[in-house]
Length: 289
Image (tube, rainbow, N blue to C red; front, side):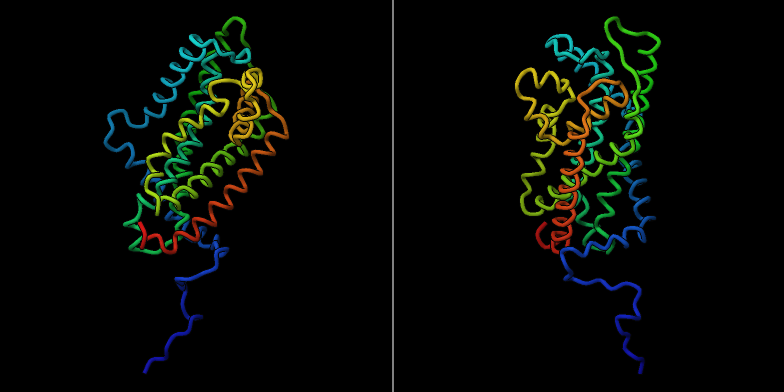
């Protein structure tokens, strides 16, 4: 009769009950090939049946920039701190789009992938991480559009405006990481809550659009302070990130070490809460979704 295997004889043991702080980060590295497959799937499936395909990466921010420039720059007459209107709005839109895409798509992970989660085991964090990585492709294309527009305005400057690159460019990889982590953390919290409260899925997209107006995407922080609500805008951790992003590429913006430190601390707290809540919910979400 064969000897019964002990727990030490198995390569992987799946347990139904584990500690809340047992996050198993080592498994994420072991499943890195699966992460790449999910990234490829997200990119291909999203644009497979579209006529223009990846060109939408250019079209969406370009049209949004034109509309913002007309409505907020021309009609409303909101200051852009001496920067060309198109560049001012495009820098804000580029950074905000990456954050909002990470948040909105991560916030529906459990609902969108319930059938996969219920059939096979793999580290559940692989799925939201793949969303963050796949969104980098879109961010990279939009960043290229921003650089091309910077080149255009460098050779064909608008009277009364100016911009220049700064040493803040060295912070660029760190800023991208902050945007990704903040969107991921908030998305993990929301997706965990949607397993019981489905109404949140309808509120997320609308809420993110409203949140944009509480960030310095369509107006500079100096304008918000002038109007008396700058302290409210500064409570949004994305404000410090966008201001630093704009300062790095255009040389204008209310960038301070204090504001960026606040964004970093808030982002780390949100990420830790998101991972802990996600880790707790993923153990029994199949029974409630």
